[in-house]
Amino acid sequence: MKEKIATLKEKLRGGVTPAMATPVLEDGVTVNTAVVPNLVNFLLDAGVSGLFVGGSTGEGILLSEAERMRLHEAAVLAGNGRAPILVHVGTNRLADTLVLARHAAKIGADAIVVIMPYFYGMHDDGLADYCQAVAASAPDLPLLLYDIPHMAVNGVSPTLLRRLGQEIPSLAGIKSSRPDAQMVRQLIDAAAEQLVFLVGNEAVALGLLGLGADGLISGLSTAVPEPFVALTAAFFQGDLAEAQRQQRLINQLLPKLTPGARIGAIKQILTARGIPMGPAVPPRPMPKEDVWSQIRPLLNQDS
Image (cartoon, rainbow, N blue to C red; front, side, top):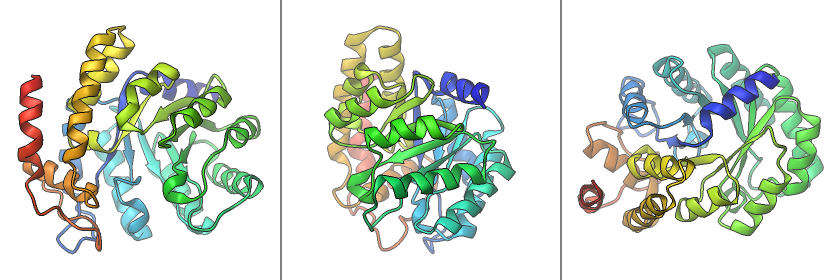
């Protein structure tokens, strides 16, 4: 397991792993597996380091268990070993999470990612039990924790991260989407050296890399990977001025995503770029305006 974790960190460090949007049919709930290879190829051709499948931007928790399995299978098949495929298996029912974790191991995913149980607040002891059960269900797969307490209610505290690093042999890392950079810094300090630490706060991505994060997991990068690939490459090559320039570009792009319809905007952009994504899973809306027409000039200006 130590070798698997080291290999995963080596492949993900220094780059961006898009939180891949999920193509669906017009019913909004059936995964369009025929489009998954197109999206996977688009992102890998753009130079991303890995793919995070079925996370928040991927609307995983809104899909049925069967549809999530179809998505995971299609992504692993399309990736074909070219980059790590991180499969999100988190649900609000432990039994369902364990089914998805075992399925991820069966289909050859490179790692599983689990969000903390959501809605009901839990003590760290309960969260530890949950993570240990998930790890035990797929002991041969690296496990990453998904820390997004402003959405899930429960998050991964520095104390819990330090504890799980000692108790779970398969713990490979964490993806923290916290907006509080000071708390992210505390988590980075608490993480064992062998863990891969990925961050999701796009607006301060460069600062978090400077604090010691290994790379990014970004929702916008599933539709507009170019500045995120350029930012991480520049930072890890020591070109701070270029990394700052790319961060400024990202911060120009973020306000263009329609408030309240971020996932719909991301899907609209991808469709405009030639990858038909279908709608956001209902009842989440699609934007009424053309978001891609606002973003494309900024990208062209940068090229």
